[in-house]
Length: 114
Length: 110
Image (cartoon, rainbow over all chains, first blue to last red; front, side):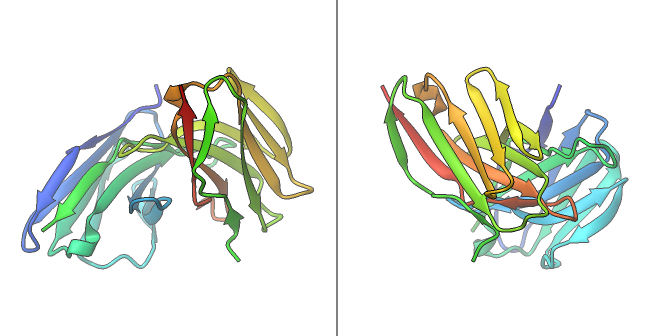
C-alpha cells in the first residue's frame, strides 16, 4: 500500500481564521513533507520532517506552522493567511537511509483564502 | 538556466500513438530520477523511479536515463485518453530533495 491520505479535500478560510491540514501515512516512512503547488507549476517544498524532527524549513512565513505528532501523522497549522496563499497543499512521505528515496504524495488539500 | 528543463507542451497525440516525454538536466551528480503523473486538481502519482543510467519498463511505460547526455525520457505505448494528464520529471539532489521539471501537459485524442 502506497497511500498517503490528506484531510480536508477542500478548505475555504478567511484571513483571520485558524485552521489545520492533516496528513497520514502507514507505509513506515520516516520522512514526511509539505509542499505548496500553484496552478501550472511544479510543487514547491515547504517543510521536511525526518524521524519526527523538522529538518528543512524553506523560509516559509510563520503563518504556516508544521507539526509532526508521531511517525504516521503530519499537520500544517494555518493562521492569518493571505489570498496569495491559496493553492493545493500536498503532503508526501519517503523512506530514510535506504536506497529507496521515492516520495509518495497524497491527493492534496485545495485551500482558498478569502 | 534551470537545473531541470522540461517542455510544458501541451503535447497532443491520437489514441494508440507512442508518446515520448523528455527532460534535460545540468547537474551531473543527479543519480535518482522519477516520473510523476498528475491529473487536474489531484496530487502527483509516482509512475517510474530509476537509479543511474538504463531502462526500466512497467506495463505500457518505459523510463530511460542517459547520464552521459543528461537526458531522461518516458515512453507511453498504446496511449489512452485516460493518460491525458501533466507529466512531471523530478530528480533527487544531494540533500535528497526533489528538483522538478515544469511538467508537460499531455492530451490523448480519442
